[in-house]
Amino acid sequence: MDYYLPSFKACGPILSVSRIIEMADQCEFRVVTRDRDLGDLEQFNNHKPRMITAVGKAQVLYMNTKFKDWRWMRREIKHWRPDAYYVNSAHSPFSALIPLALIKFHLLPKAKKVIIAPRGEFGTGALSMKSRKKSTFKPVIRWLIPKNVIWHASSPDEVNQIKSWWGNPSPAQTQFAVAPDPATKPADHSSTGPINQTVFTFASRIDRMKGLDRANRIIEIAGREIPFTWSIHGSVTDSGYLREIEEQLTQLPPSVTVTRKESFNPDVGPDIFSQATAFVFPTLGENFGHVIAEALSVGCPVFVTANTPWTELILSGGGKVIISDEQSATNLVALASTTHADQKELREQVHAIYKQWFENHKQASDPFALIYLR
Image 1: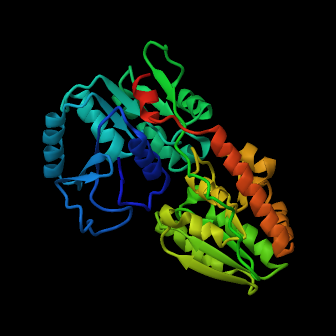
Image 2: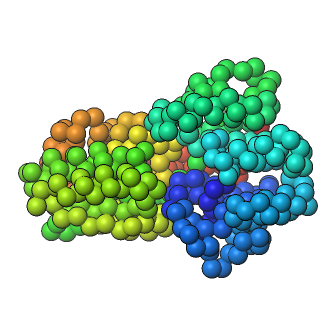
Image 3: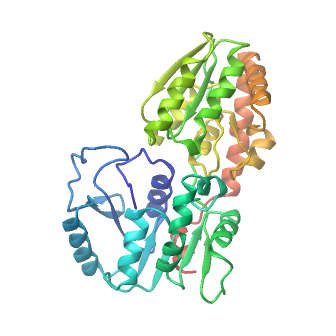
C-alpha cells in the first residue's frame, strides 16, 4: 500500500488496514509500503528502506520507487510465498498497477487469492477527480485485474460502486466480500467543548475531494453574523488547490480568526474535536470516514454532506447534513448562539448516539477472516 505506519498524513486507508491487521488472529501479514509519509522528501529515521521491520502484528517492508528496490521486493515476496495478495487500491501506480502487473506476468509467486480494496475510489466524487486520466487508464486497469478477484467493499453501497465501474460479471468470476472498517471506540464520556468561545474545525487532507473550499464559503457566510475561530488541520496534497484555499481565507470577514496546522494526525483527532464546537466537512464522498467517527466519538457535532455512510446517524441527532451553503451557515450560527449548557447537552446526545451505533456495529474479532475465507 502507498503509506503505512508510522505514516499518518494519508489518514483513512492507514487506519483501516492497521486496525484490520491488529484484530487478525488467523492470518500473518507482510506489508509493502513507501519509506516516507505522504508528501515528504525525507525517509523515516527508524525505518530504513530495504529493511523489514515489525510494526504491531505486521512485518513491514519499506521501500522507495527505485528499480533496485522493486527487484529486492520481488525477492523478498518469493521467500514469503503468500497465500493471498491484498491490494489496497485500484488506481495507485505504486500499490495497485505495478503489483497487479507483476502478478499478471508471473513475476511474483502465485497466490490462492487476489483481494482488491478500492477504498472508495469508484465513488462518484472520487471518479470526478482527474476523470479524464482515470477514463484513459480504465481499460488497462480492467486488463490487469484478475478475473477471479475478490473485491473488499466496506459497505453494500461500495459493492454497487464497484459493479457500476467493473460491470456485473458472473459470480463465478468475481466475488464481493463486505467487511466494514473497524471504527474508533467511543470515549468514556462526551467532551465539554470549548468554553466562552466558538471554534469550528476542519480536519482532513487539503485536497479538493475533501471540500475545504466549500467549507470556507460556509464559514464566510456565518462570519458575517458572529465572531468565531476557524481551525484548519490537514496535510497538503495539492499545491494548486492550496493556493485557492489561501486566497479564500484572505476574503473571510474580520470576525473570523483563522488558525491552521499543516498536518492532521488521527491519533490526536479526538483531542482536536474535543475543543471544537462543530466539525465542518463538506466532502465529495467518503468510503467510510474515520475522521467523522473520531468527531462523533467525543460528542462533537458533525456538519457533513450526504454522500458518506454516516447520513442516517447524522440525521438522528449527530449533527447536520450539508445541503446548501446558506442553510449550513445558518445552522452553525444557531449552534454558536446557544448556551454552553445547551451545547454540552447536545454533545452528550451526539456521544450517546455514536456509542449506540458502535455497539450495534461491533466488528468481528478477525475482520480479515471474513474477506479471506470468502
